Image 1: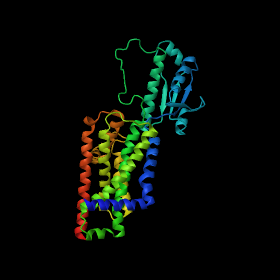
Image 2: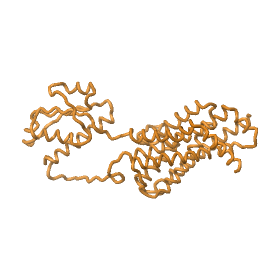
Image 3: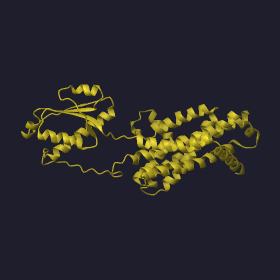
Image 4: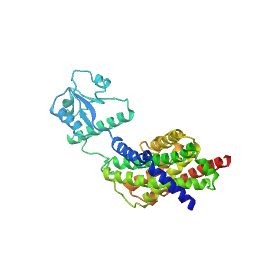
Length: 368
């Protein structure tokens, strides 16, 4: 235990002297939090919309006002005699609504009227959002004008249970915690391990009585302490800037964070024990760590959308489980009954990374 502590203190002393590493540990994670927290938005707003009104009556004007009354669409000026397809071709608008000349007459005569809608389908997800938005806005206009049947056999009363205000930050920012706190601690740990190989000081370790387990635990302990400081900065700043607060019992989140940071540093130790230079370490962490935590963790895309066999990979991605913990802590607030398995899975994956690093470093010591 004394040798592990000595190794830890030595790493912390080296860490304090390296300004570039200090920036990598604290400035870049906080900057990444701000970029992800403010830039990633899944709800489409201010969609450019052109309305060509060939009816020009009070009823059609009220319909147009309803379309633009929400924050989802913004008006785009367009000549009524110009081709609406041209606006889509030039990307001046994402959708066009064409109101026919007999719009009011058909409605007043209690007949069905058809409003043509053209949607840019280049982005399939955005097109689906526009289509549903226009449909919902049209239904709202019909209700306001008493154009819907007076008797409706089915009425749905919808309530958003965990996030009634539909704040995207409650989903994005907790997920950002998982991505940031996976990438940077593992990157620091991997670089620290590889630096020993590049400088040749790893040979001194091989010649000493320090075992592979003690070397890994000593280095990991140092960067686990750094990761805790990083987590306090990122999570504290995120809570203040984006107005996050605990929705329930915080103990699963606190314990899960400590274990998650330990697993992150162990992942870095595993990468560092396998590669021989810092460039390879950075590339490995970026490729394996960042891509999986960003794309295969449920951070942005639902895991159910991932096709087989890629759908098997999230089972061994710790960020997937930590995102469940963070979103429960700040959104659902269910507690241990909801996330206990996620905490256990992060611990088991951290142990797997430690064993892989220990075996790799042990073989290097024997061969040395």
